Length: 288
Image 1 (cartoon, rainbow, N blue to C red):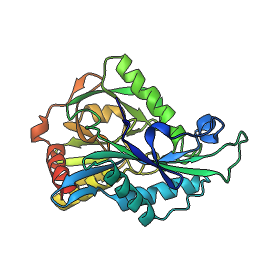
Image 2 (image 1 turned 120 degrees about the vertical axis):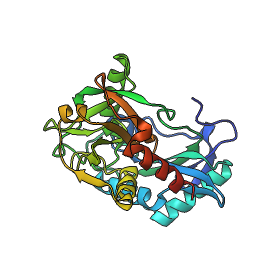
Image 3 (image 1 turned 180 degrees about the vertical axis):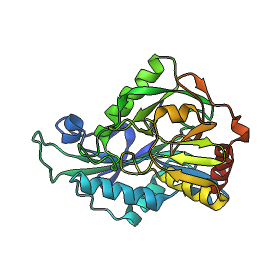
């Protein structure tokens, strides 16, 4: 996939530069140790032009992630939003995926550095799973223990775990993975939060062992507005296999139907599920 061309401009440390000439040091701490933080954000074409969905919430989380990872991000939420809209404008983008990245400069020690850099780019990108229905396997990998790192931060290094889980799933003929937490409870996917339906109730894992997803929060809002019975609690893989339907939610995935777990199919058609209603409501919400 091509993320940029000769005309693409990106924001890099206070300047607008061609993506093709943007550079950084090979001695950056983030490159060696994974200490950076980032966000995945979408903008959508609306009757009033490009709209960044939940921009404030995304950049508040970016600031939180930077803080707990000891990265001094000297840009306010409003400044970050303005820079992102400018990125879209300079690249003539409306429907776009946006990637702000905050990383640590040259430092080979295991301590924070005062050199902190900011990068913002955007490109056209469809849904993570192409809008199709996906087959999922239970991963042999687990999400990091909350006592080992800040699992609520969207940190660069955490995604080694995601890459391993996704690669394992695809090598075994599946589309994606479902990971458990350190206690063996279902947590989330490699890049998305997880919901399942049993009867007329939606279930999802509570915060604490998962990334507090912006899309997850939006789905909770939709479900409550709809009056759906909703439970945030711990559950095991076997309980999920007895579910009626299931879906992933995330900025990249949006709301993605899961057809089976470990080749055990869910019995309710997607079009008849609560997730389908949530998906339709979500699509209307992002285009307002």
